[in-house]
Amino acid sequence: MKKIINHKKFSQWMTVITLSIIIATINIFHVIIGYAKTPSGFTYLATGHYYLDYFEYLQHIASGLAGRWLPLNYFSTDDFGVDLRFFPYIMLGKIAWIFHLSPMTTYWLAVFFLTVFTLIGFFFIINLMLNKEAFYLKIIAFLIAVFSSPAYQILINNGQPILNPYDFWYGPAIFIRRFGVVPYHTLGLLLLLLIVIVINKIWTH
Image 1 (cartoon, rainbow, N blue to C red):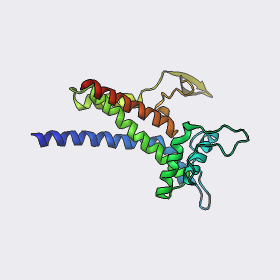
Image 2: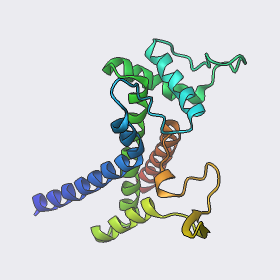
Image 3: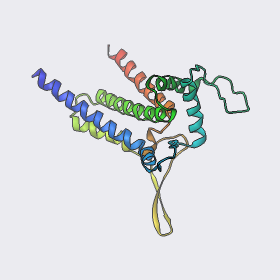
Image 4: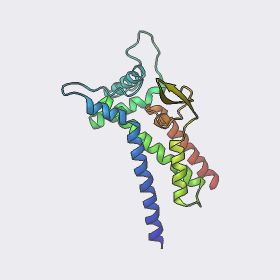
């Protein structure tokens, strides 16, 4: 009986992990398509995010890759000093050095894996909240958390209907932007989920 229960739980978690991998792949699919469309002999920079921010993040990964430990802006005439918000990118640079990866590859792999871990964190908390409910209800709750979006305004442009979402800047609510493509934003969300899980663990004991 115990083996059956363990196998059932394993199957459920494998379902969640598989869904998380699929969704995380969709999240960076525009970069994958861009790479596939890059002509032979050209260098693909994988600019899948606002380019000024993107290259600022890449410089910190490159700094970590080059052996530096402080997140400094080397491409500005202004002295911003050490900005610890970007230290996670320095650590990504260290990972890039270990695995011999380029800053661009490291950036998008970080987006992918952090999205996967965040999605698993979503389900872990849903599983805590709906502990006694059937698995299909937990999956429905998980998919609602992933795909829910704000209200839409229907616009007509040149005779074509357009769904224009109501959204705020830095208020990720649309699925394709819910997890974003900025590693330290997703890392912040992941850390918040971990804090919720740890607090729940403390309270229940």
